[in-house]
Image 1 (tube, rainbow, N blue to C red):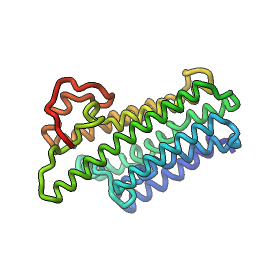
Image 2: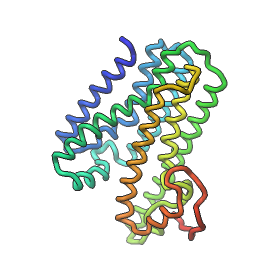
Image 3: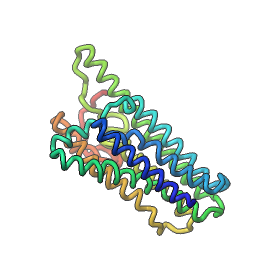
Length: 273
């Protein structure tokens, strides 16, 4: 069976599971719990279909496995696998009627996001279609860039974790935190540096397939492009919630780049996390 058919079949089965689980449990974070896992499976399906004999596909599977392991760990330590639902879904349910949210759950939360998780891995399909193309210096440069971006996201998530742990400890001790949201480290240069690194990794991943095909004119760029669109919408929604909780967030928005790390637009009073 062609590996693309296998990937689509697996994605379909996982999507059905997530939809049934969300209806039964009334918890709509099932896709989130599999977000860092199923792309790894999909890329390894392509590598396995090549008999694990194509060096480029093996490299692609290896770097995506590292991506998945890191993201799974970060999601797990925040309680993602303990039945904690993403805080955005209850807010959205309040803004929609039950029927509207049920439709949104089927078509966006489940179908669209699972389709996206397939699409971002399809540069591996391009590499599979052009398997046997020799691995060269460009592949190693792309792999190095992917790993550098992975390191950047690791640092950003660790800074966010440390901040929230310190904030939690201060509140538990009856103290007022120095600041109510993170504004230091990488977060001084981007309001969402973790989002930047996450998107950039999948744009980098696309180039593995382009190198194998010998051209950047590949339709599989659609995955990275749609992922960026998803993050844009998610950022706007997330920030609307944050701003409603913390009015001072408006100042942070005015001085700090939303995604791409850039120097602050003007000097701000330094705040310690």
